Image 1: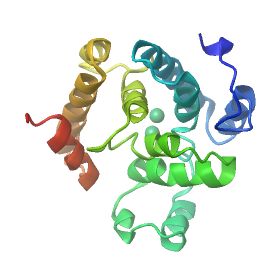
Image 2 (image 1 turned 135 degrees about the vertical axis):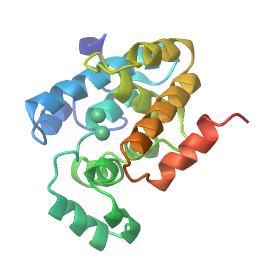
Image 3 (image 1 turned 120 degrees about the horizontal axis):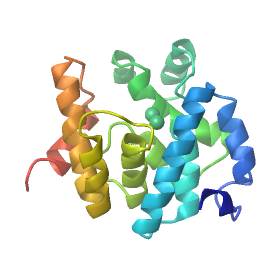
Length: 199
Ligand SMILES: [Fe+2]
Ligand SMILES: [Fe+2]
């Protein structure tokens, strides 16, 4: 499925191969292999849930674009490009999604808001998520290389429903953050309150 995908030029002038090349230049081979597995999973989910495959591919390939940027560069962007200074209380785990969308826009010229939002929200989720954002959030969590207690259940939930998979992932991510006494980014709580708490 992956290799047959030819971009329409609607969302980027780059070919899929050129985009892969630009992304690979930003990261270790290990991480790039993760990115390719996220794309594979995102395309499977897009196929199952009738979501635009080209957008799923572009968002998946770029979701970790900023993951290996030095902290100093990220701090500089937060301070000078109009981001909330509250972000400075967090680290790259939070920054790389939000600033990643900014860098994908400014450096790669991808301007489609739905793609950029999917990149922004891929680690925290949100109350309001497009199906594309759900696909990237979930694909990142259940790609074939992931191996953690509960990954089988997470994959099964994604077969049944995208919303169920978002809920499963959010609950388990928050549980992990609490158990390891890590700081919770407010958006993660927003995601929990909407997707996990019964309503
Ligand atoms: Fe990420
Ligand atoms: Fe990722």
